[in-house]
Image (cartoon, helix red, strand yellow):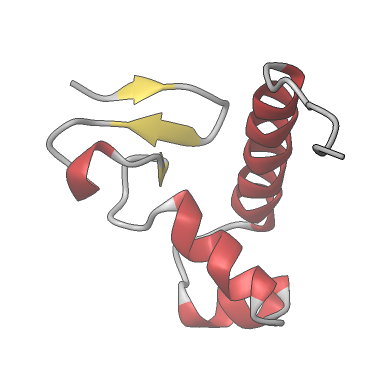
Length: 82
């Protein structure tokens, strides 16, 4: 069952092992983020994946930021042992 967890990010247990994907396609958010982290520009990614839109890449970045902020807000930071 396809479920939207962001305006362009979907999760389907039967697609890509249930990882977040872009609009139900077989392209994961993680893949896009890895391309960006490796230095690829959004324009280069769009050339390689013609079905993508710039808004898809921005949605991946927003999703990653939201996920990171949620994770950080639930962590307990302990001081280092002396």
